[in-house]
Length: 605
Image (cartoon, rainbow, N blue to C red; front, side):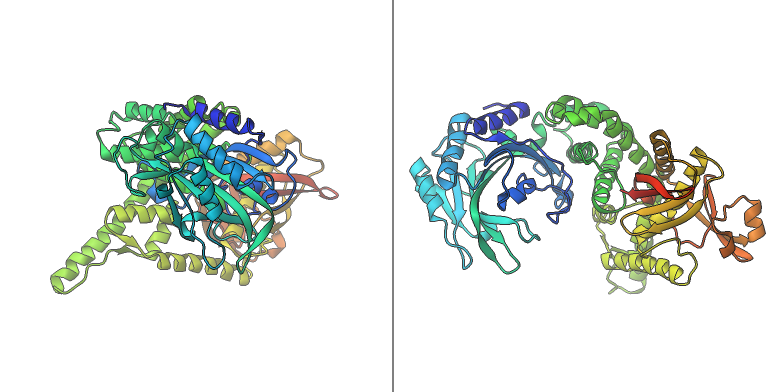
């Protein structure tokens, strides 16, 4: 049957609502820290407390369509089937119905609602092991519904057991996966080669512990069918970028580039990457708990996706900022606006942040690419020279760790981007060497601090704390610009998670002033200004209008850090090398500290 993405979402929800389920809607894509993962990677993840026994306010039968982000296969995006953002159509029983009802409803949905041939359906169940028994109950129910016995397969835990890897305390159990021939017209298809998985029903009978599994007090059902995959399958397609989710975007990319998706393999891969990564970018920035590109945590993953998309825009010969904005606008206006109305309200903000990140990286990319080519050329020169001297010489094929760290630290290349570019040229990257260079960089920062050259209120000596320290300089300058030149820092406290900054000011800041300061700091971060270190006499520093926050701490020769003409301070350091490393600056709270002193708490995201 032919069906659009909007129709598929609605059909799923309507079917389960007719079975007494309540649509609970989607939640944030961003992990809340309780499940040990950065993003929501499964539709059931937000429901974990309820699957573990907490009563849900909307009842025991639930359904929704939930966006998910999985990044373990980023490097595989570019083929016909991998995506970093996707939607899971789900429904749940929280201690209500179990295997009998669920197998019957899935069978009804597939055969009656979607018109699949029951004699072509295949299903797999858990074969059992020392920790849990063989799932004969599900197999018997499948046979009673009309699934051919020869189409029911018992498979091991690696295939038919569901749990969130790396987590403890989460629900888990055997699952029942459903398959259908890739080409329904093919005579005598062979399982599994000629079949595609279309969804699964997980029977959560256990809770995962440090040492194994214990029975759940209430047995639950978790059903997950991928909307992207189901849409592909029901429309008789074999390329996930041919569905209505991507059709308009691919057409726009063809028009922008003058290249044909179906006729140009190199362009096809690039278009898929730009389309997928931009879609995920839209969803993460536009999320209710939206994030922005940065150098840590979820923001680092977002930056990696965006910068990979930027590089493939360049491969397509198009301007990255305008291309990614055009693709993002198409997703918001034509594909997801109805299902995710928040994206429409945040459209201008999303496009502006995409434009800023693209332009920020573009300014660094040319120099970074030149540096990358120098690395390759250096290896090739050495190989040619050594081969001429020693016929038995084995050519080097690895970019050094220090070189890779320089690309990261100076030019903003995520290690994974360097690895991908190197692989395209037949080279590897010394990841251990990169890690060692990174640690050396951290140790240098720690050494500076231990020497007493600038405590700066830091409670730790990590790279992130150093970035927060640099942010205090930007904040100090922004407060002077927005409030008064007489504003000065009165103290600070910095951890890896936040900064606290005290300054003299006689009243509470207005919301408009807070926003103006925040915007000005982020503007300077977006400009990716070098942080320049220089030693000079105290007299010279004063003559050049460097700010001495704590005058009594300085000797005859002082260390100074300047950030363009915006911030000039006497300070022992250490600091980030460029403002672009800081990520997004957000003021969390502005409050009184003491008489005539205000306090700002802020975070880098």
